[in-house]
Amino acid sequence: MSVLTFSGERFRISLEGPETAPPVVLAHSLGTRLELWDAVAARLARSFRVIRYDARGHGESAAPDAVYSIGDFGRDLLNILDALNIPSAHLCGLSLGGMVGQWMAVNAPQRLRRLVIANSTAHAGPPRMWEARIRHIRREGVASVADAVVESWFTPEFRAAHPAQVAPVRRMIVETPAAGYMGTSCAMRDMDFRADLAQVRVPAMVIIGSKDRSTPPAMGELIASRLPGARREVLDCGHMSAIEMPEAFAGLVEGFLK
Image (cartoon, rainbow, N blue to C red):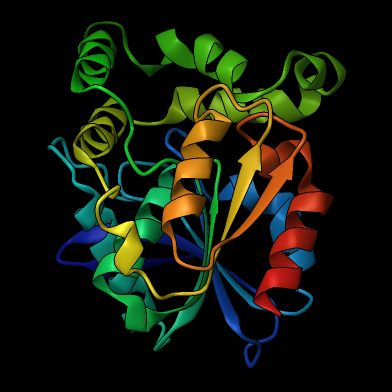
C-alpha cells in the first residue's frame, strides 16, 4: 500500500502485478474500500498491472465534509493515473465505481482503453431518497444503515452460506466516515448519464446481477442498451458480484480486457 497526495488530500492506493503489464483500475462501491476487490485482484494481477484505491470519502483516503460530485471522483482518478505516469488504462468499476467509469468515458475517453461497468446505474433514483438517507446518516451515523445495506447487497442464500465473507463488507460500511458517506450520497443523488451514453466510443462491457436489489437488472440493461456496441453479461448473484462470484466475475473481465 502507498499514499498519494493532491492539493493536500491523501489517497491510499495498491499496486499489484507485473509493472510492464497492461494497467487496469478497480473502482469500488459506496461504503467500501479497495479490499472489496481482493479476490478479483488476485486473479487479474497474473496478467495485468492492477491499480486499486480508496475513493474520496472512504477508507484511508481524504473524507472532507462537503458535497461531492461524480466529477470529483473522476478527477481524483485522473490525478492518480497522472501520478503513476499512466496515459491510459482499463477501468472496472462496481456500483459507484461504474458511475466513475461513465464519467471517465464521457469526459476523458482518451484515458480509457476498455471499460467494465458492474452492478451500476446511469441515474441513481429520485433525489428525495438520497436526501432522506443523508439526513438519517447525519442523525444516526453510518453504522445504523449497515445491516439494511448488507441485506440489499447480498442474496439471502449467500449471506447464510458465507457469513465470513459478508462480515468484512459490513465492517467496511460501518468504518466509512459519515462525512464521506454523505458527500458520496450527494454525488450519486446528482448524477445522470442517461443522455450522455450514446456518445461514448470506449469499448465497454456491462455486468448485471440477476438478483441485484440495489441496482436492479433494468438499470444495467439501460446502460448496455445506450452504450454503442456494449457487451452485456448477467451473473446469477446480487449487487456484490465481485464477492459473490469472484471467479466468474474475474473471468468475464479478463476475457473482455484481453
